Image: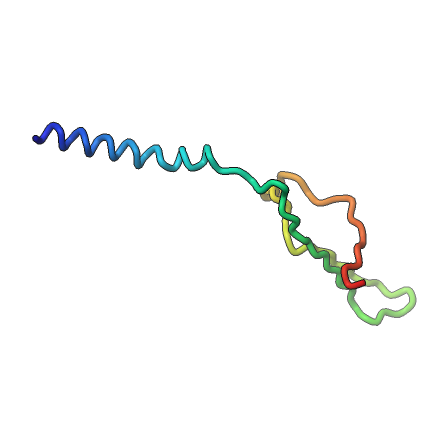
Amino acid sequence: MQKSRNKIIAILTALLMLAPIASIAFTSAHTPAWPIPTTAFIAIAPNPCGVNQTVVVSFWLDKATPTTNGVFGDRWSNFSAVNNNA
């Protein structure tokens, strides 16, 4: 009786350990890919500025690229202006 109980516990433990690996193998991305809008922002200071006055221009995006990892990974490029309010 004790041996069969130990076997059942060993099998259940093995299944629980393999469950995360199995779930990773069967995951997939969306097809077609979901469009996720990214918004760009710009700020200029001081506003208003005078002639021959130094200005600071700040530019940022609301999302990082999916492969960004600190200073490594891909970066956004080839920006274009799209007017979605028209």
